[in-house]
Image (cartoon, rainbow, N blue to C red; front, side, top):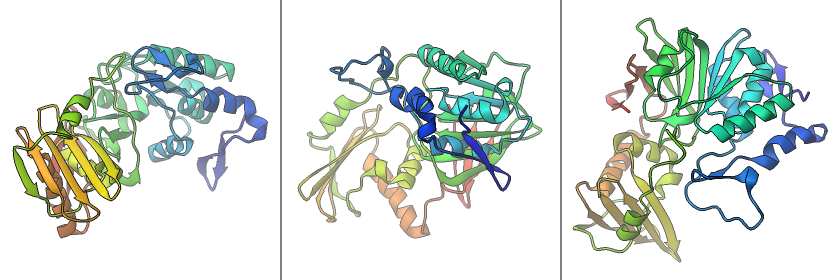
Length: 346
């Protein structure tokens, strides 16, 4: 069996597979599980297939999987709940590190679970792998876990995760719509407290069935063409929000659910924003010039973005990194740093 983990000064780290591990590489890299909306898996793809729509699963960078486990501070004897089985890659690492009997892995997708279970069995690893929606009640109680690591993103921490944590247990997860990685330790009151780590991590949103809700493609297209109810000149250059990770995270915390489109046409830069409540914005400029901003709907989305950028300029950084995390027993999650705070609810 390949030695996926090595000990370096007491720390467990990943050794990437070498030539001697080609069978292991084939089991994962060549069969990466990117899925097409609700009905199509890459394992079953034909050469002329052209997936469309929003993917519902993806293979994760190995170093990121290991990074999540490092933040969890896995120790001998720990019981782990691995949320987001996916291909089974992370589950295999955890089972090899802790022993298969100490690992429980869950995913909402029955196909992913069955395929991962078969792959793990091929390697002689037989952790518990179940198909459930982990954002709801967990069927394992009264069993609890010393560590919970989620490779799916949630808006606020589900109360069921807190119930499934042992006293003093540690949680590692990411906030949906952001690149914020949260670590938190369970407290005597049934909640948890911790921090937003300085590392960045991003995972697909946790879903509750075979598909995600429809995207806002129609509204984004409309916003790309129509005249705004309000037309102004913005104070800052056009920015590609989704590639400005801290800015994107800050905006998503304060105004969740915004979708973005960004494109260039020669020197012209165009950014479009849309929200399910009907709000939209479009900013257009040449190079770094101040943009013409069209906005419509009940909220002014570009103004919200500019407020975050103004905060950044005034304070030197955005408060999202390094923020304190307070999680109440019902899952309500509060991020706070200095005089800034935001409450996240499901």
